[in-house]
Image (tube, rainbow, N blue to C red; front, side, top):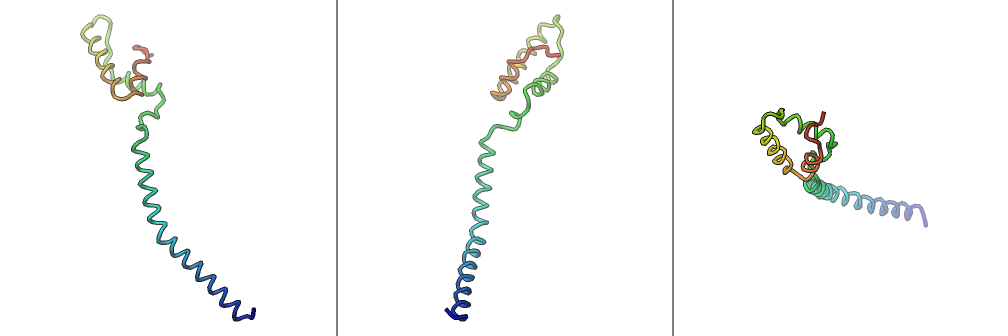
Amino acid sequence: MDELDEARAELDRMGGTERTLFKQVIEIPAAMKTQKSKVNDLVKKGPPAINFLPVEILSQIILQSLPNCDDRCELEEFRLVNRRTNLSTVSRFWGSAILGTPKNLE
């Protein structure tokens, strides 16, 4: 093969590389858009961020939101139990944390 044939072969190889790269430049943004959509869908389907809180912290947050009540106030105790029950229906994680936590965690 003479020098001219080698130069033409190299030019053809470069042309093929250029076509491949150009095709990738066109396809990659579309593929990225599809992947971003997939990631967003998976995030939406995943557990809520509140579920990543340690149970101890969630228990403290919930206990801070509940009113203090002494043993003399039966109506307030009823409201406290009712509020704990309502909060436990927010999610399975909350229900498990609330119902598994002692009433007076100090």
